[in-house]
Length: 154
Image: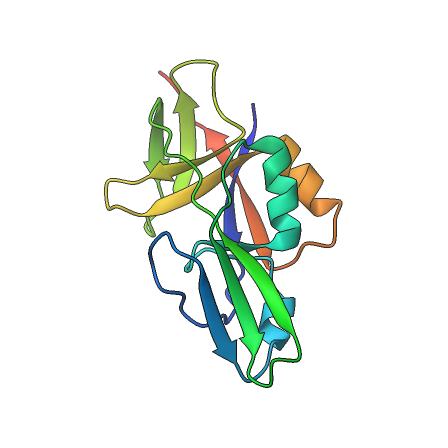
């Protein structure tokens, strides 16, 4: 199976979202940044459009919305907390930033979407190639994918 890291593009500039498992409404003077991105790894949130796609691949409860509301209350952007489950049945190598670069799985029951955690505590969202293909066929923005190489077993 081929897997990729899913990261947000560096030019995504959404304001910080409070951590936790509660819904939030955040007032903003302008929503242009919210329209330009569907994923923000720093805040662990995804857009409503990306949420619909992720629900097809991952039976996950997206119950905590984050609403960015324009200060004059004329428009809003809907996001959802996104925390794929940790998966631990793998061996991996990490780059200097703590992101997965090489991986090998201990069994064949690997989820299509999961979080890998480096020894430094850096969390990486890992997605199967079928998920990447589905995302790329849609107008979902603000994402970059990097192929994870298979770990050589000598």
